[in-house]
Length: 154
Image (cartoon, rainbow, N blue to C red):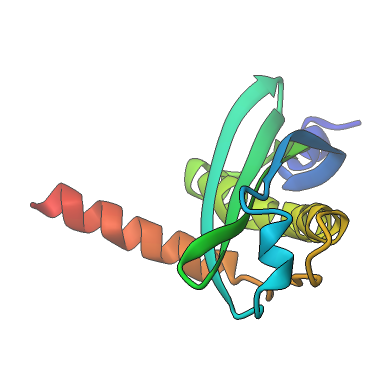
């Protein structure tokens, strides 16, 4: 292989999912079984967070944290917390592209797995299924960058 071909191969961007794993999951229904006797008018709250770290050469762990709090008549019906993890092999990206991949692309890849785990826990808790709507992680990433830039400017 020529030096040019080797350089092009080394610079070719690569991003692949190696493993999806459940890092942590928690379910609470503090008012069960009394809540099942009440009229069900759920108020859904959703919190999202992501964390990433390098764990090897070109290997990154990304963890999508989701907390779903559902209240009924102002009181907690149930609370589900999931940390959905993934190992990604990423190479050939500049720093900005890597930051974007870790902050938007990887969490978007993990979201369907987290959503399925949340739904399974809720159904096992004897509540109606909750299917979280798709999330635009690119828009959240851009919003986060703009917020950081605004704080830096101040």
